[in-house]
Amino acid sequence: MGRIIRSASVCALAGVIVSTGMMSACSTQDGAAAPGAKKEKLNIKMMSSLQTEPPDMNSAFWTGLEERTNVHLDIDWVPINDYINKVNLVLASGNIPEVLTVTDTNLSSLIDAINKGSFWDLGELLGDFSKYPNLKNNVPESAWRLLRYNGKTFGLPRTRPQITASEHIRRDWLDKLGLPVPKTMDELLVTLKKVVDSDPDGNGKRDTVGLMFDESYRTAFGGFDPENTPDGGMYPKQLTNAYTSMVEWYRKAYADGLMSQEFAIMKDLQYSDMFGAGLAAFYRKNPWHQYGLEQSAKKVQPDAKTEIIPYLTGPNGTTAVLSPGFFGGLYIPKSVPKDKVEKILQYYNVIASDEITKYITYGKEGVHHTVDNGVIKMTDQGKKEINNTTIEPFVLKLDPWSKTDSPIAPQEVNLKNREKVKPELDVGKIDPFSVINSPSWVTQWPKYEGEFTSMRTQVIIGKITMEQYKSYIDQLKAKKEFAVAYKEFGDNYKALFGK
Image 1 (cartoon, one colour):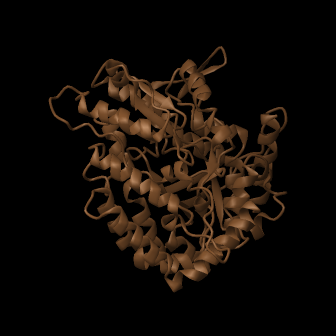
Image 2 (spheres, rainbow, N blue to C red; image 1 turned 60 degrees about the vertical axis):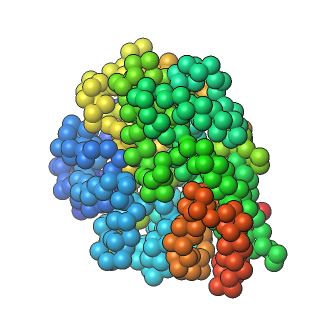
Image 3 (cartoon, one colour; image 1 turned 90 degrees about the vertical axis):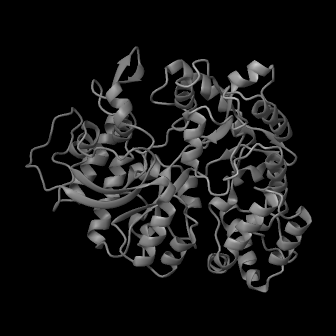
């Protein structure tokens, strides 16, 4: 079946892009190459997020991808901690690369640019997907449906499985103290306090961090269920009772000494480094990081063990968050001619094939991985050249375990982790605010966002009372300029979720 997809997609691409010839030859059913001279490569200028050290674009992996697609990627890699700021700057300047990776598809600057007509309506070009079978068949239907803005498709979804995150805890520290793995949000605070107070790294200081701020935890307080206004609109997440309950939970965590004093400005990558260095006890991240985090911690404490907790239970839900089928999108500005847009779409149709998705995931056999009794094992070169940065600028064929299986972990570890996270499918929910939007909100909220973030920080660290914070939220809810946004959120929620 993979061979048929390969032949169909590659041939369609070669047929559409006659002038540039994205493929040097069209694969036939028996694997022989069709006659024809090698065509000029298509060059695509992109900007994408960087999760690791900058990749060597002349490495065997990237040159191999170029050979397989006859497309040269000129990528401006931007560190993930600064990525949103760079996207904002690029959108403000109007000097947008031919493909822009956006990690937050509800970013106000992106919505503003779409409203101003800066990006192509890709839905018109994709049509019924007859020219793009892999984008239709290998990308979740929910991704195409939930990425729409005002009923139109402006971005290509960066395909993701339903399970994309879980909780990670230092199991060796729990075992040392005779503590069970926590199952609820309240138990987590009690457990982490005992761990942090015990000086688990043995340096004689109380400097172990328990947890970082993550607003997705509002789902444990009912935050993924809509809270409606009296007239049938929908409050944005920041103004919901569930969000306020989550803030109160973090206030207790901070008072117990479980959070860094710099939590409000701490970036995810910083916390990841802390966990790997044995300076943090608990971390919410993709399940496939479990093995890597454990190996990093072992360099500091040889007995380190990282345990996956699929989810924690809160008063009105769990921490299990399901992906809508994508995380972020790829956007093509109107400055790109229509004929090149179509070539770019054909390129992504090939990327979403079984063959190329496997290559991007595992590289070349014998170079980046070996196969032993059907089990893929990454080589040292593969581990170096293929990582979580590698998939950032692509639309891949859906793999339900792509955020659970680690390319550097033994197969038995990956299979065990799959079983660990499966329960998320039964209780998890999609964050509606990862997909719904309001044109009015993105113009009004920036006026108050800085003040809101400051008030949230102040109440968590105890500078103001919960009563003062709640009074502030009530004042925000009553602002007349938000009324239109409430209606737009409500209408958009009903349009996307059908209820």
